[in-house]
Image (cartoon, rainbow, N blue to C red; front, side, top):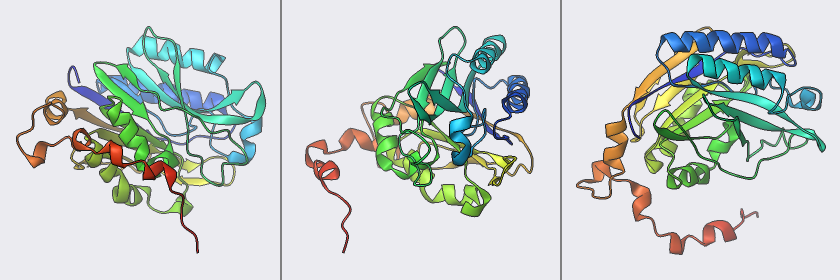
Length: 283
């Protein structure tokens, strides 16, 4: 990292198909983030259009839509990078992508498309097929959406590509349980094993249809340490300043102790062919 980076993780409500309402909330929270000197602000999965697989074919926007253009203007005006979840329409299919659009000042919109779809999403969405890495405000970062983070390979690929910060936007419903407690079972390992900062956030409240979301936001350091865990009971932002010196020290070529090891530098990739050759064993 070129310098310390201040990030924000948003928990907020999003109504299915009510893009104008959602946009106003996004813009309002972005202005609040500006007052907190946040450089990169991450919103939850599908926050612009609402999360409801059964309604996916009827809602959503394209990357060049009016709403994305307005969010781009917001990014320009605030001098901030916005990571906004959306249902991304496809011209050739009624099965859209679950996407996170990356909007940085003076740059064209970029996008990450969710690679690992949950089983309840497979009939309604199209999976993405790449792991892009982005740069802004002196930091290199990447996005994985919700179910993506149950696959350790996602974080490893991003770290090997140079990502220093991983963002994990979610749309996890109440029925899944306390999202913050569940995250702590595996997201800490993703950060620790790959020497990355990791920030997660979730939708909260009702989607205006049949789902209720539990909220949640947290930031984890490159040794799996918990920076902060949001106890917000309403919409808001969890902010954290990420130290450049800390991650640069861990990732330097020479290492003096196990405490500061960048584990991926010592992997034995010539032995890992079984990882992609083996399938799940069934009885």
